[in-house]
Length: 215
Image 1 (cartoon, rainbow, N blue to C red):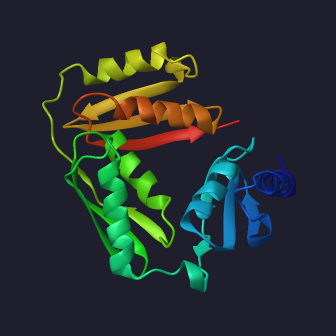
Image 2: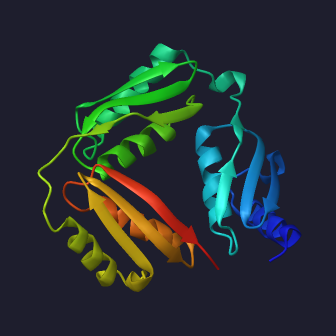
């Protein structure tokens, strides 16, 4: 697919998504890598723009260079924003009480510990939805857990059970809680399914994602 056609498809998808102000986003493409530039009004909108671009057929990677610039009535004192983040985290049953947050100039850094990757993901999701957040940085550490000896086999079996994955196109290696994924998939949806499946294995503390999206 030509760069010009890919740019048009991404622009059309951004326009189609009501959560994104497509007029504020400039799109460029180079051999499947799409770059988003411009200024949006919230961190959530920045995330939604990247998700929209990844939905487009032919997109192999997204470089999200969008900047978040809050309107005056959306700006928050750091202490107030931190209080809201902590309150939202506390009310979410999926986020452990060991997760904390720091805020500096609207930039939220999540700290502390968790047992599972889904708990980290949920904490980021919660903080990203709060008004006044300019960015969310995940510095939550996963607690080491007893690692099953057959974690590699477990991930492979999870790939085979997933109807959305071609297990034969993916390889898994493991070492001390670190999982490395390699191979090619035909869509971002398949890519995300594979990474999510790897994180669900017991004892995994890091996933090195080397999967290539190829159309």
